[in-house]
Length: 315
Image 1 (cartoon, rainbow, N blue to C red):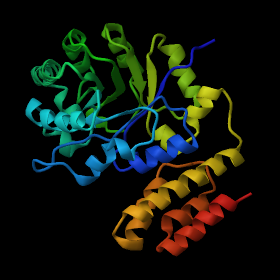
Image 2: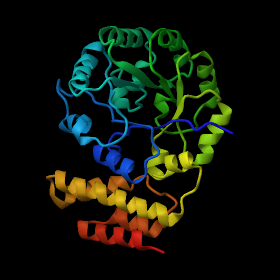
Image 3: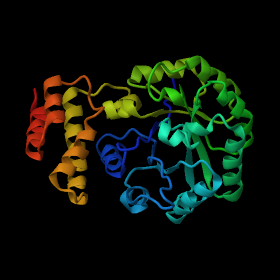
């Protein structure tokens, strides 16, 4: 019988913010560790929502790790100072973000083709902050899967808590297949606890990856959990939730997120409507298309709430 692996909820900019994480943990759970979307420096300062999102008093999840993205020690240093000020002792470094605007400045997976920059960033951070337990989230490379193999000796020498690997190239973004052969090659040389991330959409997918790659330290799931909020819970409890149970939990989660945004947003109905529509971008792709379309096409908060009512009252 397979052991139950820890499940990590991958951070996704614009989706897994503090309200979403709190609501998911309260209504579904099954997650060992939640991560904040990456915090970055913008014009020398921090975005208000990033600071609010990592504020310990705002977070009610069992275990939260903040993530930073930076191309150099100087920028990472400022972000780390914020994390330490907020009391965090574990930090994740993003070397996987595939978005070209960031990658071209050597942020995220854009740094992977430059071993000397990776070494300078990681070794300086670890040397300067021995009190912090660091992990990294990365891809196979930016344009060549051998990039991660060239980085392995550097990574192996550092006292990292774990490495999360998404087996795609940065330039692929989320298109195309994951490269499991390249993942296997990296697993063969990686000396740190290794977590798999990428295209996990069902409990069967988790078991399949576990079988194919024995010795994994955990699974990180992003879009699969946005589509099926119950995925981690189903894996942990080894059961498939009934549709009614999922719908009931989802309704509670939706209400929780909606109420928090309604209280916090200051841009009126239109801002709230746009924000709530993102909640449904990945969610339940197999659900009734007509009902989902009514949610996505709603032009006012009133129409949105009618569409939501219809969705949750379907039988």
